[in-house]
Image (cartoon, rainbow, N blue to C red):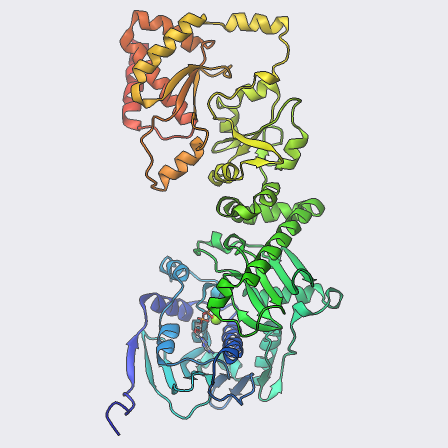
Length: 629
Ligand code: ADP
Ligand code: MG
């Protein structure tokens, strides 16, 4: 025997720092639902079996092909151990190290890095964070994992750890394909050495596992593919339990869509909308939530190919008989059929959302509040579904009560005579918008304006561009002409106009020129406003592409944009401040210049754009000093 063939001695390795932290939390947390460790280990065993079932279709040869695909559990009260055995895909040495010694998912790592171990943790969520295996240490003082990969040329290994910062790996010859996990239970975890207790836990959490689970050789679950059954045969509770099982979730589903079609594709889908958005819990980006099956064989878990990324909040199963069973991952990505299923199901989901909005508006509103950001992401990143997504957007508006939402569809029903465009304006909140300069002209003419309170809204609307042939127009666009909506002037109006007409046209034009000289490169143009009534000035966007809100977001996210200066300043010659300024500049040019600059800064602030605070505050003090003199 050459030295190369002798098995290396037992190797001791350190856990990755985040794993140590995870283990620390698991070991020291107070257990409210300690039994969930078993759900995690059984779910891993089931995953391993599903992976094997698929690999067997791809590989020329697999090890131990004769073994039945099942999970066996043994509980030994004398030894105080619990053993979970699966005949799944198994792990080789490298896989044991990387799967059980590190945390691969970067979102989980960030989440864990920010966890405070001193706080009591709700470990029931552990499976969602892709670290379910470590839950074993809730019940076990020591865990031994013996595993043998399905690949014929591999050999078995044993991984052992007592969670104290290190683990060992050593060869373990002569074992079957799959994984055996032996838990040496803690003194206070003896209950898990009782087979009856184990059966009870399995029935509770794992009844949807699609392989037989045997406890002391007695089959505990009934294997079934829920999505393949008829709707009338399934109870609500069964649906909800199934959701919890496949999504590793603890909430109840908010809504579900169960359908099957034969044309243009043979496809069955059982999809759920969760109640909670776990991306909001500070746990990075979600993985896709839908598993792809072909004739009840799992082809791809958390499939990236079967739905667009922005639908990652949807959980469930899609099963298509039309797919070849032995399709590989690469082929999935390139498959025209998969792309077609993707489109069909995405459209169906969007139709489902629209139906919800119509038939169960309260449920849809919850969906929108929780997952609306994903739909906006879709509108921005994916041009395939823009008309459908546009119909699903919701906003507050000048015609809704505070906190109430409306749709583009409803907006269109309220269009003023002659009105073609749909108007929106962004702002940090309703009050700020209603007290700002942008909606004055609209309010006066009774034209509705949507309030885009979320920075993503403007991006979504500008990408969507139009809704049912109505252009979507930001109210901070330069040269907005609203004169078509003016009522024929009444005498009273004329009176008001005269009263307001602070500057005659020549003076207004001269003041505009002077303004531009004073402000220089800080603005593109200074124009007399046709819209303003109550405010002295506002900044508007001449390019019509990027709204101020979008500009603010892009600057805040570190995007390189040209310095400020692309805006136009509109001044209101009817406003006493502007009229007075024309007079002041003849009398005290220095003060007049300061006032002009301050007007621009104020207008930029009202547009939500950042202003350099130091010079602004200094100037403001100088102006105030003049007042108290
Ligand atoms: P997750 O299941 O979310 O990936 P876990 O912490 O539960 O996270 O498991 C980590 C990884 O360890 C799994 O992704 C899998 O690759 C591997 N693994 C765990 N249990 C088994 C098993 N019984 N058979 C094969 N691989 C397993
Ligand atoms: Mg797991």
